[in-house]
Image (cartoon, rainbow, N blue to C red; front, side, top):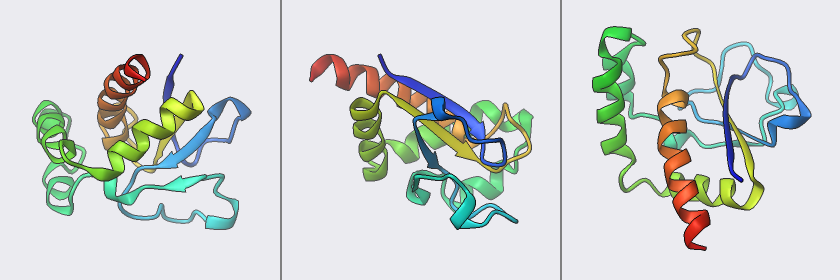
Length: 124
């Protein structure tokens, strides 16, 4: 079974997090790499700078953001690596820095990742 979780990078680490993957393009403010408990930083799976700035965590733009982000992810090599990581490890926690815990790229990415990882695990 594949378990994709989403959590703020500033929240406490938990052993049930599995592999913790930072999915933001920019390193979170005030967080030291040495003590971050981030296993992998996949900045290239994050939305483009243009899309990130356009969205600006505006809940009114959420549905359009998700749609545009899915288009960006279509041929994203990092997403394929993330799918493989989920299939191999079972539990992956996507960590992010945004204050809005419902409208951010990690939440949108988790939706895509769940579908792709489930398909990949059934096929393989």
